[in-house]
Every structure is written in C-alpha cells, then in structure tokens.
Image (cartoon, rainbow over all chains, first blue to last red; front, side, top):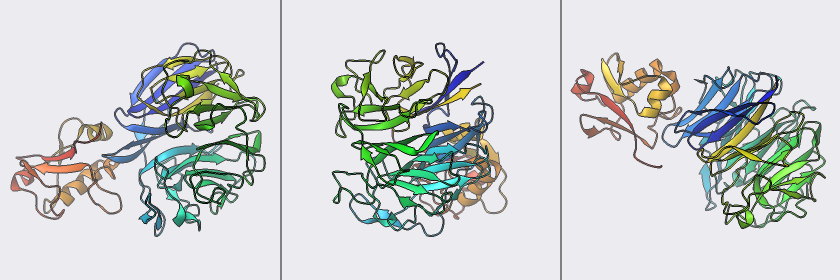
Length: 371
Length: 98
C-alpha cells in the first residue's frame, strides 16, 4: 500500500510523520536528537529506508546521522568536514577578508541511484561528497576555489550552500546555490563550476546584475524538464529555460516576491509553488495571512491557496528548505513554519490541514513517497 | 581509572549513562584523557575539540576539583585526585543560548 513519510528538521530535533496514501491519519515520531538543531533530513531515492540527517549544536558542532530503517533507529556517521588544501578567505560583513571556517551542514542531497553517494552543502559555503554512505566526506573544492570565491559575502543567515540539484538526465550536471554568492552549475560532476546568474538583478549590491553576489534563496527543478529551473531569490521569483544560462522574472501578480521556498508539482512541470513573505524587514506573511501561491503556467500568473491556512493573525515564516512535494497520483504538498506547524495538502494545494501544530521552529521538510 | 562526566547531549550521543571510566596510559593530562575518551567513543570526535586543530570548542568547558581547567595547557598534568579516580573530570556545556 502506498504511503508517505515526511521528514521534518526543527530547532530542537527531528520528527518523522507517516501516513498512508490518503494522507489523513498521521503517526508522529520524535523528537529524534532532541535538543539539537536539525537543519535537514532527506531520504535516499535509491534506498528509501536510508535517511541522512544533519544534526548540529552551537556547543558540540556537527553530526551526521544515518538511518537504514526509515528513521526508526539512527547511528552517527562521519562528521569531519575539512576544506581541501588552503581554505583561503572570503569577504566578511565589513568587507575584510575572513578565513573559510566550517560551521554546519545545511543540506544533504543523496544520489538518485547510489545509496552510498550523498552530497552535503555547508556553511561556510562548500560542497562535500561521501561515497561510503556518510562515513567520510571529501570536499569538491572547485566550487569554493572559483576565482570569484574571495569576493563572496555571507547573507544574514551565514554564507551557506543551501541548494544542491542533481540533473537526472545529464550525468555530471549539478547545480548549487549559495547565499549570498548566487547559483552555480557544474557539468563535470562537481569538479569545475561556473556562475549561472545572468538575468538576476539585486538591489543592495553595488552592481545590480553582477556575475556573483546575489542572494539566491532556493532553486527547484522538475525531473522531466531538467533544463527549466525556478528560483526564489531574496526578492524576485525567477525562471530559466536554459539550465541557468539566463534567467527572467516570473513574479507576475504575486503580492510580494520576497520569500524562501519554491517547489514544483510532481506531475505538472509547469506548476510551481511559493510562499510570499512581506519583506526582508518583516519575515512574515503579508497582512498576517498565510498563503501559498501556485502558478500553473510556470510563473507570472499566480493564484492564492488559502483553504485551511490561517487568514488572520499569522506571523510565521517558511524557510528555504521547508517545502516538499510527494509523487502520489494526487500530488501532496507540504511545508513547515517557524511557528512549528507542518501543513499538508493532499490535493496539490487546493486545501490544507496541519499535521502537527506545536513543533519547534521548522527548518526543513522533505517527503518520501513509499510504495 | 579516570572518571569522566559528559554533558547530557554527549551522553546521549555516546549512548552512555552516568560517568565514563577510562584507563589512561602514561601521564594523565587533559589531552591524554580526551584522546582515550575519543578512542572509546569515536562519535565524540569533533564535539569537544576541533577535528583538525584539537582546540577546545568555544562553548565547552573542563572542570575538576572545583577548578576551571579550560584555559590550562592540554599537556599539563591533571590534579592527582583526578588521576587516582577520587574526583571526576567534568566536560561541561557552557551556559549560553536557549
């Protein structure tokens, strides 16, 4: 029987939310790693029983946890993330050179077809790879050592590599996004990288259309159309039809084009979801109304999805890795909030209901579709 | 045997209850105790000291015999009471955060 497993990372632990294909009755497991920040939990597409979790603490640093039974039991695996060679410097907030220092793992991206292969995006921005199921990690230094690296600056949340997308059709092609450097593409399995930010314009940087320096919040791709990318930038929702070589704005009629997550319907590659947030000064939804916006036209034309979501007095945020879709026949959409709610829609966003209401602030949401 | 008290989160990570007892060969120093601890519980590597530099993490403190040893040199001998097991060596998460 089909079902889903929603993997939730929060400020104070991880939670696993499970349901059958109807997605009405939920079993809640957790907190796992209670008291630790869980930036991301993600399952291996190649082996759905295998999960990886990024567990970290200001006191005790980074752990990577792995489960081989769908999140019932976990074991710590490798937690040593050392930059290759001389780490060098990037710019600090005040413009001075600052040594590259590992802080935490923001995002884990397991391979689509090899359960031993997993990538990690880290702060300070770097890309690591494990070929032994997370036991050991090696940096792919070509990204960090790109000639523009010394000019990268952290965003307010740190200089994080938060997005890793593996192209399902073209072996070796992958994307990474860094706040606040921008989007990058590799066509040789991560050995070398080029910035792919043409068409982005960002107020707040000296050269608004610079090659690097943009605060990209999230990028999404549909596997059936891997050349089409959608981006939620600090401000602006953007689209590329040429694998990131150029971007154009598709914010259209959104009430605000600031936000963090963006995702694509599992079966409709032109159906896109965002959660508009008032501004970078407020970090909560406009008018206190929590609204997901859906475009069925690949951007520009957006409709508000409100049924089941609070439409007054709502002042939560939805962070960049906190939205996901399942691939059941009627696509499920999920997102978590900084107020501790995880909302689910079993009808592609038409209606919503909370699975849980009172978790710690949600940092990430992923979902596995189980057969 | 050297008695070591871990903070709650590291006890959970290492799957231990209460104190840890360690046999330490040679001089009993902060470095030799932590080396023995990490050999026994590899999952603690990187949680107390930086993997590469070996430096104490900023929000970790080392206490023993009612003294703060956090700023002592890692190869200085620990108090005799710790070396004999009369007193524990305390690894403490600093009071900070929420």
